[in-house]
Image (tube, rainbow, N blue to C red):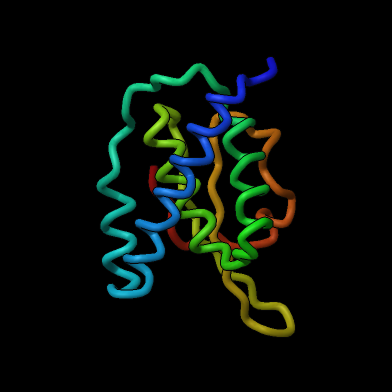
Length: 129
């Protein structure tokens, strides 16, 4: 289903607004504040007739355009946007220790086909949604 131009703009606007909220919390508060905020988000009623696949795709485009490559920030604003649009989403943080320690954050929606295979390499240490 092709989305109308107005719907696409509304999605990008909501993504951008949520990005600014997350960046503000990330910059001026601590990690615990960000997690508490994300855990407190309720699923709202979806007023736009969109599927979650289009939200994931537009988040990737916006993050690439704005050169945002921190998975915690991108996952947080994607999670907030999905909840705002009425989708059930799960937020994850995982760790991996092979040669070096690394961590990663990601979001899963109901469509399991959208899950990146790289996420499976991380041991889940936090999940909510």
